[in-house]
Image 1: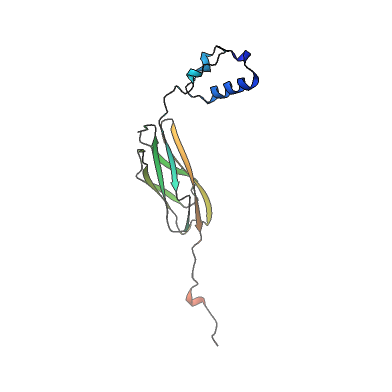
Image 2: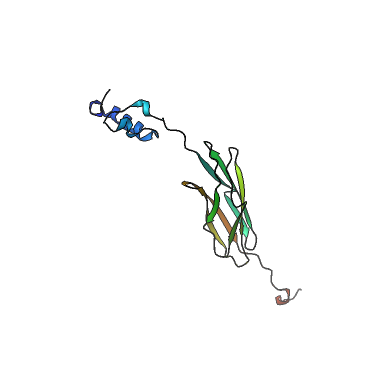
Length: 164
């Protein structure tokens, strides 16, 4: 068995890099200064999930809602219920998820995020951060919300002029 002291610099770098990348390596040889390639990748895959938000950007006129689909996909057998949330809402906007909790599946479970604006919501571009979690498993995604001011028509009584 070779020790790190006997390795050439290139081999030492490779051994350290492999040690750092390997999830299951406990001390990369038990902490005794030796590299044991049999310990690489011996840990079980960690269950988790992915989160995707679509569309990545929505544009609405103030006073109308924007709708996003949040897809949660289970990885490595993850089977816990997660609760989604959103931050970054502009002033005068509110958000709701339906359903309010989701259990990710291997094919992707969805929840709909509806962001409601009012006519008083200012025109702006906001970056929304959508997050979901269960215990120490947390994921997030981003989406853009573009709000434009409503187009107002002039009061017909205020129009003056003559047609020739």
